[in-house]
Length: 484
Image (cartoon, rainbow, N blue to C red; front, top):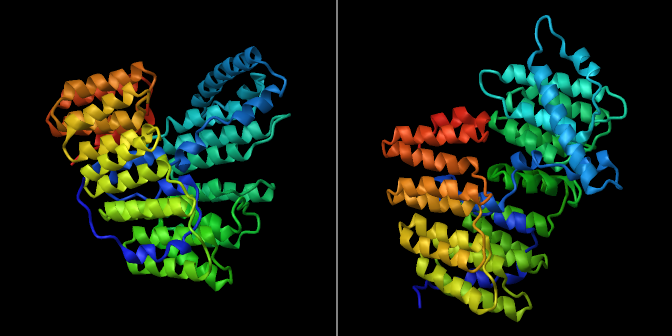
């Protein structure tokens, strides 16, 4: 059937001591520092929703608030078209700002209808243009518009608008200005949320200020930590999504020192952090402690164990665990199988991956796009591109549409196979099917072309990206990018 390793009794003795966590959390337990280079990082990117993307998502509630709940489709469509035109006019005026030209009175004379969507789109337009050369100017223009729009009648900034402005300051490396905005939000009664914390920890963490950010949020009386039980859990969860595992350990100690007992979520986060740090003795100690406090495993905590067993190349132990799940009323799902397969593929056991993939289908489950992408990526990384191509074809035949991460794996496989023309065609194919390449797709193709000495072709890909209007604000990064 497939190669098996001995089961792990220590883990099975601790089933009763596991805990609850969301699917988002489960998708975040797989990060390694080299995952993007070894091909697995793209799967995590799909499973994870980082603060960067979430801050730039369309805010549907803002749009509907601007239209009114009774607005019909045509009125919404007309409103959006008007906003696009107004955004272009505003950006044109802002770009003229400078000595001898004050944009504020000109903006006022335009007689615009200010809405949350309009403010968001203007700030996003500025974010897209930030680079090393113009970052100071972008910060000034963004804040000038932010202040001006906040002064207009019948409009009040949303928390999302503050986050967008913070994003501009972050891209411009104006860290003190970010903190001033947080202070202003507090003074004006805006909720300081987990997203606010994520933005600060991402930016200031790189500047060596991560612990100070955490200390401030621990002490904050205005931190809206819901839906978490208390601020410590909210902070721990955010740190986990950002892979700050060592800082998680410190926060956990602070939490215990202040008399907050760990709950199910706390234990899972700490256990995951210990696993990621390679502290398996601590990991098992936490399992023991959870058992003593009476916590029982559920759907998501079994998911964590399956990944641990998969990555440890213990398919037989994983099979026993799945049987145990059924015995206690927790039926394995597509997520459980996919998580296990992901771990096994990292261990290089593709035979076991195929077994569990087929077993999932035999049990009546329909593999989703993530399941197929995990299988494809595992074979690409192992240098078995022909099999990856077969799985890709099987996926399409069964009605699963490839996403950007599936395509990235296939493009990477084609490049590794020396089929650069086919890789370029696949990029165009995904575009023709409405699947827009992300920045990772471009860097993957450009990196392999450069390493193969195909510099003209690499420049052609970059030119194509720019002509499409994609990631122009990251152009300097892709020009410096090299794939080893």
